[in-house]
Length: 152
Image: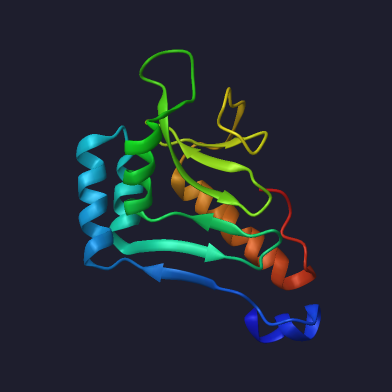
């Protein structure tokens, strides 16, 4: 993607990477698993992946570090994703258009309808993290093919 980006768009690409987890990322993932309602597959993800930054795929896609999730949890708490007290999720990332991705305690991934978590209205995007990552991959593939990542 980066090789053709400047030719297609007339300016150099930004950061577009899937960064492997380092020791600090892995420690943060283990801490997160102890203090938050986090799905097991998200802990597994953060044991291997530090973060995802695709600045140039559409408006951008970003999956935050486990350390960032911990800080956000400390500062803002969990996000209501349902009707009961057990339906609390964690903000895991966003797109460059301001929409926010939230992982629910059962593993589903939700997206806000607006760029705010104040009285957030969430739509379920996928049943689990694997499906969400597959959607991200399809967005990247589509963007490479025709310059349009679709709407995730």
